[in-house]
Length: 177
Image 1 (cartoon, helix red, strand yellow):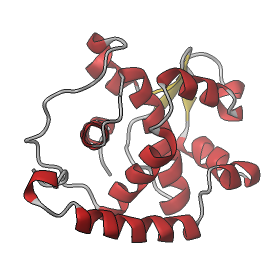
Image 2: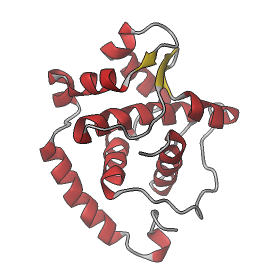
Image 3: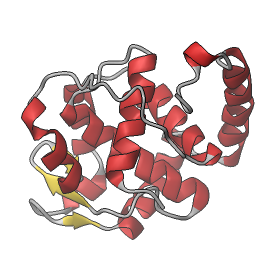
């Protein structure tokens, strides 16, 4: 299992390569979605840290502390030379997350997460347990809405193979720079 900080760095690096704007607030929501997708697809957490219900939606406090100085500015840190040892299936979950949610602004993602029953049912600063997150993302309508199923994963794996082959040049290799 990875730390939320490790997953955050990978999301930032991948988003920057795709020219997707990532702010600290947007990063928090992407972590929440990635955790939910991974819990449903693989029945295990993506990262060990907890997610809390804050005023602007789900937050991983450790990641908040790391990036709070950026406020609402884009995270475009120079992390290009860091080596990432991320399992292929984890990369695929993060690809799915960016494909589905990367196009939204932080404010859009706040609105989306505020509609989630798991967020509505919690009091401020309460922990959203991994079991609760999994249950929410796995529940009937939500699983269909987010297209979380094995068929989607299989399609994503095929696309990822094509994507990886296209990007398998030293200047485009985002995983092993």
